[in-house]
Image (cartoon, rainbow, N blue to C red; front, side, top):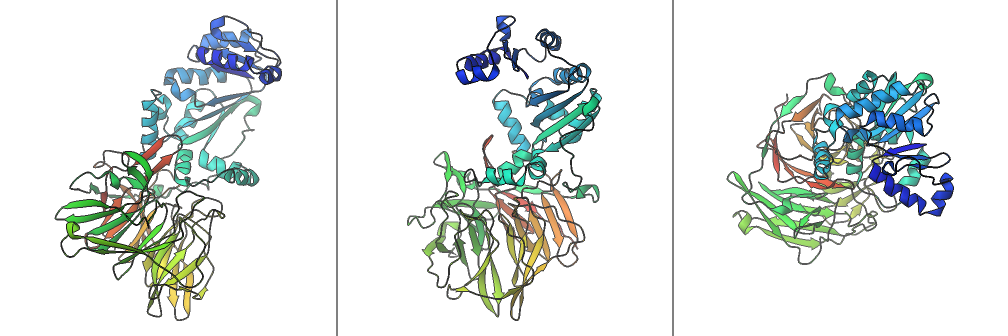
Length: 570
């Protein structure tokens, strides 16, 4: 094994090795060879070499000097290395390796997709570290990366992003082991990061047909090559003052009165720091301006919950259910929130919040579930479906809460049950509920749409049959307008490029993928972990919050609400 890095890095690494007896014994010896500034360290089967890779002739001579045999089958590993070099220098390394080694595989791990919102956040992160990703702009995707290696002399080249690599090439037993190491609930940022990193394998000589994987053409859905996507316009939601409490994710919003929206929970800005939130945010339209105010929950009923549900009912109530503080601490209470605007707008608005005592057998605690108002025999119920819990990564059960007397009620449900899921979305349609997307048992986004349809004797599950497939997604929002199902945002791992909106005609099964014109938005617009409210009369979606906390790139939050303008589709 030959390891090459900058001379100063190699010198520090060599010092660490020589000061650790276990490592000294592992590599056999710690004899230094060559000029001191090179930081050479040679063991029996391990050679550590300090050279700037852009000095390609110096690299070639040094490797020859310490005995590399370029006729031997060779594996070259580059873990986020080439992209930090200027493109001319990194291409020279790729070309040199193709020329020098007669039989080899070159494996590269680095970034792609610089232009979508998460890609912009990623680029900003590395720019702040003064570590420009040179290859990212010139070689922004898998095809460009493959073409580069083929042009530089490699005979075969394949490439997958890390989502496909994890789903298809990590053994199930190993995935289960990894997923049980510690509580984990940052699915969105995990999948988004994986979609922005690739593993590329280029080969030549005897290894040309022995690449370690074969990308699956069935893994990706590219509907946009079949139909020209629609383009939707957006506008910034004009607010009276900038309210930092509007910047949050994993929250809930509900329309409690005309042009009056209540938002609870989530993770965002609190006293200049990022934290879980327990305030109530009121947003009301006055003329062309939306006014916002934050109301404290002095009784501490809300707690600092995330990934809960807040369902606006037909009689001005909102029911808040479930959620969590940490993945080990689900929230069990059910709250009723009422808003009385008094006809005077936000200044006269009065909110009341009280805990609800329910009779019957209460469902197990959960978050990332859905809660929807449905009607059975002229009675209204809250339908709770799916989610996850501390003990189960995916739940597939459902429950009915009577909205008349707050009793948990058994109602017969027929038909094949949907696959267990969390982070899906539900909305009311024809007295029942539409369930869309979500993450399934395999932690892969789902593309199915189910209708819980009321009957004379209960409900029945029916799958909505589509003319064309719907791109699987989760962490999205959904609404129904004029029998059209609107899917906004979400995280997708099976498609590139990503349509921000999908419109589905529930009568015909025809779907239309739509891009959003991002020009009015001057910051990366994150359409996951957001909330949205349908303004039916204006044919608009009011989008509040969105973003996440990436373990690599920090917290990224949408700066202010936006309005998505919906087209007429007949």
